[in-house]
Length: 552
Image: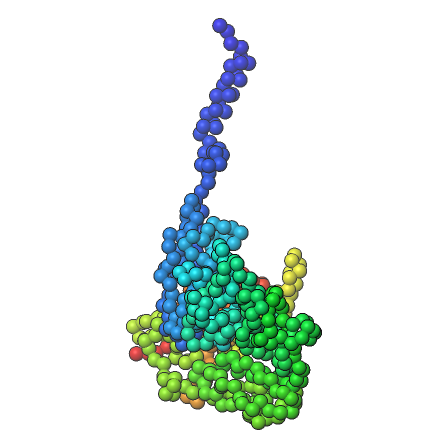
């Protein structure tokens, strides 16, 4: 049988195609065979918020999940912070996100992409709400200076019964617990009070009309009264008068003895009491609440509890930052008045003994105010790095540009950047510690200052200048050798920030002293840990560090 040349050619071509397809390693297999495992990382952030507490880290601090798994195998050993209670992990700080446990789907890309940071929640006291005698319904933590819960749980339900409020006794015979009930000394358990569906329960909701939140009381049976009114709300420059059954003082006064025959919203009546506000600026110390002087022209009468500030002694309140005019409990107040705390250096002292080696990450450093985050032990001595405290400036870490001087506009992006380089990358380094006999971050910071000086200088604050200008201490203990950390130094600080008791870092980017290019410098985000090149004209946060050395 003869086969035409044409047919033979076609067969050869088809055979060749088949061979090529069989051998081609780039041929796309089925979708199932090309699905590669994806690894998700969960980072556990301790959020230590009291630098004086003794703390332990979670173990481990990260966990990974590789598909097809979608959840972590178990939670780490929880962290501890003396004086506080651990309230679990959440997807946002201060329990403001979702509760995270070993059943949370880490592959939920609507929440995060391959990396999730979860945050420890801390509280001083807790209120545990029980929907019956055995089952925990909800928990609310209280952290001073708050005295009440931030929110109340939604009323629970129970077949055959109606919810009649929260009570300190499981059988409903204790004290009523509402939103404004203070919790200031210990944890407390409260229980849902239930009545049979054959009884009617009415709710009395208190609208404070701009005052502090009060809450809701429950009354059963119909025709009963609340028995005792809740504590009066407060409102600046107003005096609480009474409760009314309707808004705008309508419907008559509501008292503890009024029979309740329906659900009610009662309204606060206030009497205006014009006056002045005294705001207390603690100048880097612990926060102090404002006071209200009523009427104008009188005095506060009693000053608030003095603030505290590590390594300092409180020296009184003044109406100016030059500390020439003291403010006392009897000072007349005729206008809204800011006052400022004066501090005297108190290191070394009995309260703040001299800091000497050995040091570990998280310890207070030789400056008394800083926290150690890096240690080097050599044959000739002991050295390391410490970071300034969160209150190194009285308003917290400032947002500033990396450098100022000779601003230029990028022709492509129209972004403004700082062109102050006179040498390639300004001769800055990304390393940590000592290189060629010099501290990298300090050398970088001085190079940046020199670049600004070379183009005429500037009066506008910028990152390196703020750090080099920072000084703390008096007499024989003055610490004025702070600088802007290099990229690797800031990375080390980020890695040990939990060990430094969450030393007040914001969830944002911080500048390093290392240049990324002529237009950009390295910055690092203190939530994700991401390091990125950032235009030098952008506003980023700043935290000074310093090197300490002890020669043996």
